[in-house]
Amino acid sequence: MASTPPDLLKPRKSPRQARSAATVDAIFEATIQVLLSEGAARLTTTRVAERAGVSVGTLYQYFPHKQALLYAVLKQHLEKVSDSVETACRHYEGLPLETMSDGLVAAFLDAKTGNIEAARALYLVSSELDTDGLLSDVTHRVGAAITRLLTSASDAAFSDIEAVGFTLCAALSGTVRAVLERGASPGALTILRSQLPVLCRAYLAAVH
Amino acid sequence: MASTPPDLLKPRKSPRQARSAATVDAIFEATIQVLLSEGAARLTTTRVAERAGVSVGTLYQYFPHKQALLYAVLKQHLEKVSDSVETACRHYEGLPLETMSDGLVAAFLDAKTGNIEAARALYLVSSELDTDGLLSDVTHRVGAAITRLLTSASDAAFSDIEAVGFTLCAALSGTVRAVLERGASPGALTILRSQLPVLCRAYLAAVH
DNA sequence: ACCTGAACACCGTTCAAGT
DNA sequence: ACCTGAACACCGTTCAAGT
Image (tube, each protein chain N blue to C red):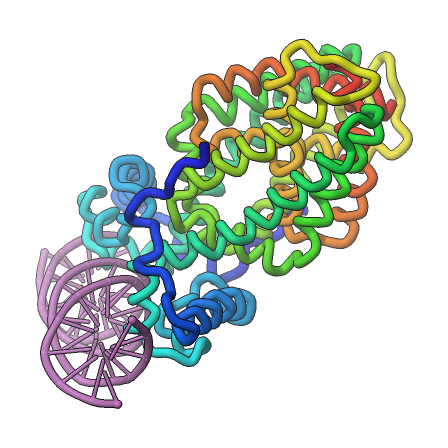
């Protein structure tokens, strides 16, 4: 049910030979590196191409414009997060509610704070493009996984389970974002790690 | 204790005559309008100046660069939100915990969803600039107001009240942002309005 | 004091020419 | 098939000239 990305944001062509697959990988890698070393303001298509060891023209053979490049990089990151949340959800299926809740929070935090700098860089870049579709896809995937998980709880049943899954997803991603975006100080992260499990447990206990 | 904005982000000069105060107001107003009507990608200093009825040069007399302009507009919006949260906090002082919680959530939601389009536009623009200082100021102000409020609760005491205030602030702003940024569909907003009070009540009950 | 707008540097994007 | 890089349009920013 994933919405296909608007045509304007699709990669221009897919690599058909080994050489060009390598080119695309290099461009991806270079984008993250430039973002991290120079900042969003100095993220230039020319600079990315240079860092990747290709010409600008080559970059534009694969991505119709800068937005499409950033979109692809952000998409890759969000899919990694979705994947680890979905894996965690399968792993905790059928267990008691509090076990699920703690496992879910841990999986989400690990995925987002595994590479804090990259995550922050991508937040910075995400508002330069139209991410409505991408973000709502991720929300639906993660929300659905959480909903399935909660349905399987051995010790709880929910009335409005869709709303609960949605809210939990928004609370997790939003709270983590709020902290990372405000500087991600070690102190703030410590608070997050101790309070987020409490918050989720409490919410789930209240609505089941 | 508010951190002074980095010099680079300060307005270039303050208006000293009525004419120039009007100019600054017009520029502010024009920025929001262009953002709303043309989108972040087409937000150009020339376009803002044109809409404000002044020349680009004039714009640059008050703001050293585009970032400083966006910074000022975002700051104004965040201060409005901080103000209404602080007002709400004073209003609910000394009352029972659940009353406080509901009042706080309502104040925050009202402030953020009063002008949804403007709020969304500002999210889009906020990642084009260095908002670490600004955001952590707001977090501290709001976090402190919440902490004071909780201290005054007639029926509760907290052990790590700083962490609770901080988490509540992050959870509120993050969750609302997550929803607004994912399209702010009416359905999502309805869920938010019904679930956010539950979430906050439950969290506060769990930690006191 | 404040305003104007042509001029400059830089960045996104294209396309004719190369392998 | 894939790559190159000079060329073009547009945007941020400045500054000499105006009121």
